[in-house]
Length: 323
Ligand SMILES: NC(=O)c1ccc[n+]([C@@H]2O[C@H](COP(=O)([O-])OP(=O)(O)OC[C@H]3O[C@@H](n4cnc5c(N)ncnc54)[C@H](O)[C@@H]3O)[C@@H](O)[C@H]2O)c1
Image 1 (spheres, rainbow, N blue to C red):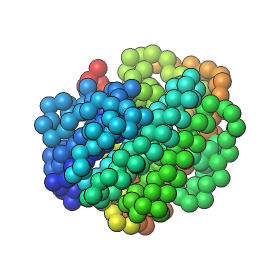
Image 2 (image 1 turned 45 degrees about the horizontal axis):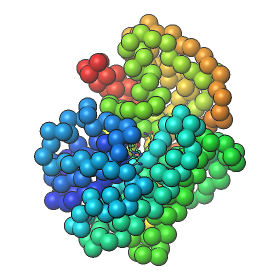
Image 3 (image 1 turned 45 degrees about the vertical axis):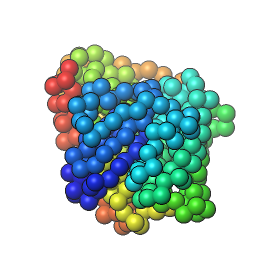
Image 4 (image 1 turned 60 degrees about the horizontal axis):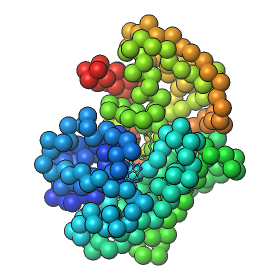
């Protein structure tokens, strides 16, 4: 599959490589490339990814807050750096905002600084988030950001740390000619997700016949992007020369639904008897989030292919198989 993007015979260093998205990228590229996954195993999708048996993929356990550990693991002939390590998941963000700021800001500083030493670096792909748009994000484009966030509220440390990360890598592009490119995932879901994603939780609970928890009345609106479509966007950005110094929204506006309707869809598609349990939310949420992917379309030729119903069917099937 790596051949589809003409990413062949390369050495790839990927932070957060043991995570949901990192392991999926590694599987896509492992046949044609050598891959170093750098991860402290805060989350671990690696153990169920099958990558342990893949000789071209190596896991190095380390922390992005430790620049010496990064320098040691980042071999000098690395061609691509993918920086996907982060603390995401709103529960961790609220319980430990200092750690979020450190990992996401200091970590990005460190990984970019270490990459400055790579002579043959072809692209530094940085992972941001759709959260950078704040509480209301309708048809939001890549360049104009007016985030509405509440100062001092722990929940927004994640969004702001990721936005700073974008500025860090853009500054390296401007000042040090580093070929950086940023992708902003909009609600990615699919097989082997770990952590706290809504679809991942809904599917697991629907299969087990347990209640699906909905915050407030479930009227929050999200556009869901199947992981294969997202990976396609990442690899296009990684390969494209036009992506240097740019940020891209990667998502699927056609797969937009309220959280309430999403839960109903999961229950129906899983043929489950689960019920919905409504719970009051104790932090501010994003009411509406739908991407505009015009730049990814124009620059990269990106177009999502897998609509929500099909993606949910595939996800449910995968979770059933590995239960
Ligand atoms: N999944 C989504 O919908 C989504 C949405 C927006 C942004 N993102 C971003 O995409 C990237 C990948 O997300 P994911 O969904 O695969 O999450 P994930 O939690 O599965 O992967 C992140 C990985 O980073 C690792 N990590 C955390 N702290 C670290 C540290 N200090 N040092 C080294 N590794 C560390 C974790 O162990 C984990 O394996 C993240 O940067 C995340 O912020 C994801």
